Length: 333
Image: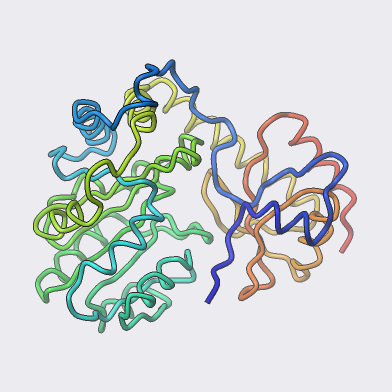
């Protein structure tokens, strides 16, 4: 079963041709104004990753995420890598319940590893028979959220019956009040964090698993040494400590999201959810809107299983905002 993703410009070019203005890719939820890469020591490109840099990265990440013990911070080469490794850490197949609709790679990877996987509509149904419950918070693509207290309670209840709660918090950087990373260390709770989305540097492939106990140790053994490259570690430890940039970026992204709402409404799209990094939209003829945009070189994220919805990311430069605005003003579907 193939999983459809955003960012497939090659596929879009094959389907619609290469636009004269080039592609404006709004199909992902990546910050279009990335963290400025600091000067990097040349040796970081030529030698194996330094343990000293790795240890400091874990300290910086623990401070940023609010985790008490840096030992509970496990860097990985992108959370996608983790999704493919994690399901294989369990000796027996588990009843995995995923609160959806959500990011399809969770279901794909757990099913591929032989587990009993089912996507359910809410956390209560997931808790009824799930041994492992997966919640994306805020959810991708709908933007639905769950209160941290609710999730912490769920983790405790699952632990009591030998289960586990996995919270994918890839888009929680913009809403720190919803983050429960500070509760990591409590039995039954694992939190997944993405570096590339909020910091806009998805290409360096960096993510974090926040976990404790025996499961964390098995994961460390599973990913092996040198799981993250040296330049990525160096960039991230600087970024995590840049409090001014983080604060300014959260404020800027929130303003940009409201600006995007206004533009999308001009094309008849109804914003029904999302985060500061993307908007989740409804339109009776969303497929038609997607095709009009693509034929004009603007790529957004469609959902074949939910054909009346689209996910739209943020433009970056002002000319990109204007390009989207001009196109939305003439859409008439």
